[in-house]
Image (cartoon, rainbow over all chains, first blue to last red):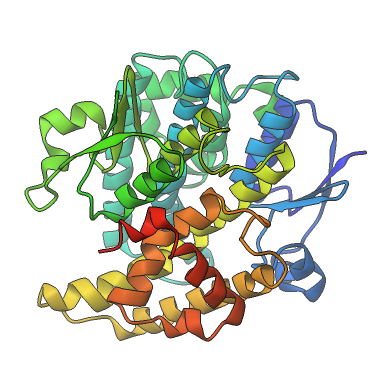
Length: 210
Length: 210
């Protein structure tokens, strides 16, 4: 039975999940949730996830929310199917978890702020906070310097294997490169650039590119 | 050989790790890092963790940062020793991961903002942002309403077992209750209150209370 993924296919958090489902050869169907109509706050949706955020998955009796919890679940449940996204040992998984946390805690927020300020504020007729844009770009630059050093030693963030840590970077890096036109932050760093070229050309991601 | 935990013992992120090491019966020693002297940005420390944040652990050849990655590692490595903090099945672990993510993504930030505005700004002679305090308290209230509903059905967040998801809430909830005097947010919710009474009285946490 196909896994039900609630959320618009274009939402970054949903794409974080879907790219991993494809990597793990898991059959899924998207149940569209219209964020503009605030369907994620409807009584029906709040029964699935009381905080009212997408995505949520339903897989038989299991209902699960939070994208990074969902991708861990499928990576673990189907460890030997499709790509191994968690590493082969407890120590390898620890390193995957470390970079997955860096993405969640240090990478996502400055990119999010850039997307909101550069892409959404003008669309909404709001002025952009130039100070916040500058600050976010500086923060992100420091994180990317750390990635550059790391990726000069290993092909992917957690080692020589593509993992959840790399996959989780796809949606927001796509925003950064395409939508907010800050691709130079990637391109000016040799190893980050090669890594992005590699992961963004995976078939699992190419079908999801907007 | 004892695990080396770099970070001041009082730092919330270090206490998140240490409480789990105690639960898992892992021997450790604290290597003090003086944050006021910005030792976490010293060249020596940056070799351990290029982003320059505490805690970092060293365990034989393994160096690991990001507190929630560290606690997952020990919960998995010593699955059958001390408290089982991840659940017994892949599905139980998925639910633990879900609430651990809610803590990281939805709970920590409003408490952090309250701590900064109510505790640190006055100490630094800065005025507090009353709007942000109100907004953070409202956000937190909504998350705690979700916890109240959840904890009316199970003793702990992930089910009837104490897990990483509960443990990870300890440092910031302690700040909330003691330091910013917002304990009423906990006390006015019957099941959240009983849960806090339970988890904050675990011997592993009582030795760490400041």
